[in-house]
Length: 170
Image 1 (cartoon, rainbow, N blue to C red):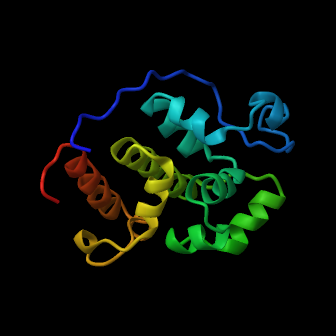
Image 2: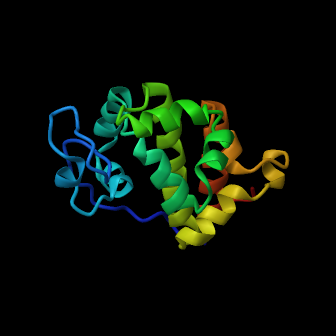
């Protein structure tokens, strides 16, 4: 646990699209853009500047479902409630193949980035998911996921993970 974080090579995909067959902004099918449907992996493979552009552009609404189901193993309403997002708005965007807004995309991206860091630190994606959902004494008895709706909360959660990674008392 006290070792330095792994550095991963980054690819540069042009756009992160969902795993379904809703048309993208360019008219191609999402499944054609990413045959495996790994929208989270594609986002993480992007350099940070491209991630920021993707967030501003609006991520595919299906990424919220992927984060809840594939990363955190929780229901979509649990994820949306933690991030203070409207379930009805996100479900409507999913069903109508509309992208999330920049602010909605930012909240989902924060969740993905913190989960990735937690996976690196804890060396296990399942433990990372459990850690994100469990109340933490260092976060005043709140779950890390519940703090990701603000930049300050994101910074606190990230700080705890970095202290764990480098063996500093949390």
